[in-house]
Length: 169
Image (cartoon, rainbow, N blue to C red; front, side, top):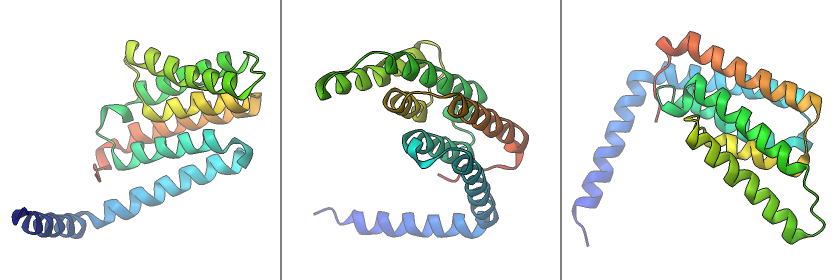
């Protein structure tokens, strides 16, 4: 058994405690901002769009908890979700008469959106969830407006507050 494991765990916990004590205001404020942002999204989307809401929740986490990561960049957040919306919409148009076809179509929506995000340098993992959600539920004008408005607002907030945000991970 590795005798160094308990020591490394203890040191890791001490480091986390020290970091939290030093930056506790960032932890609290950025978590509150994430709470407010997702509250607004949920308020305007019905819970029948839970898969899309979940992908926006993941985006909110990235923007507020990991603001320096490449996936939090405006290009990635907006570009990734636009790709996800487009792929989800295209695949939602394909008839799926059985569970097997539906499974294949939903999987292709995610795979295609992943491929396009990687090729266009707009990688944003939650956007694959957007593709899946739209492929499953279809898209309506209100969903399109709320998703686009949400990703633009999150990107603007990220851009404006970036100097004050700290990576919490």
